[in-house]
Length: 370
Image 1: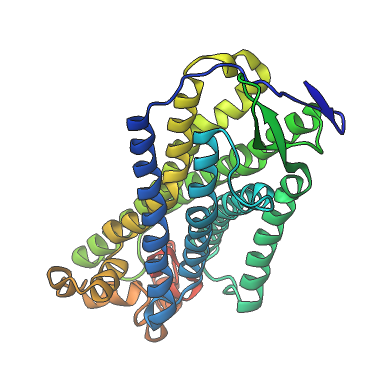
Image 2: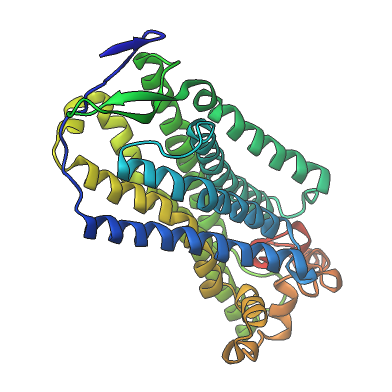
């Protein structure tokens, strides 16, 4: 062992499972597939939102921000860190030793904080439907704070990671990316902080917000005279929107759970890193976490008719281009004609007839506009 700035760096690694060539090729294919899917799929999402006027809403802008974070993971985190972990050496330029994990921390932070921002925005729109709409300035401020927070959380990697020389069991030196400017206690604190800020706390807030939102939506009825067909369409749209947003959050939670659990356990039970097949287990956990970056475009295409139609137009899929639109009222609820439809006027009629029903206004960017 040698000591660099009070951090012990092992020169001889513990023997672990020697990954055979066929497994390396399979892992390379798996990681390469999700990296390509993340960049292309989320690039399509951003293209659709940026080029279609009817897709421009606060929620869709948040979705575009989420897609951008996933593209960053696909470009900078998945391909480079994977090859370093697989080969157990750093063959890339030295600056990328700190650059790649820095952007990985930023993108993961932006992803989960954007999911929280979407949940809070939907919560406000449903429980306070007549409150002021989110302005462009407010939206830009929120997005800026999210990216700034991600950058701050990634600074320890910029400061700590360096390429150092290691010695294998044959006495040969090889470059390895290692945290040399942070002590073990500092790294432990940093890992636990990331688990809390990137996983535990945001998902707790999101779960509570969606629980309240679900209770409010399932107990709500549209204002005005009862119309069976209209009410059925509204309820169907409610369920689709809630299902889509909840699935996005649930997938994030499930995909990142094993790796976040490992990050905690390696400090509580350091012996797990001595297990012979820990490298294969880690690859499985890491691949699952990284794969979360490519699922969202498929979810949007399955559960949102507007995204499905826009994807079909961009990809020239004739079988989807002529999908039937919803009924006229549903089009208004989906935000296409929200400028000509305001439930606040119907709430005035309700008050005259002593009706006590929950009014939800599209002008407050209710979730059906996504």
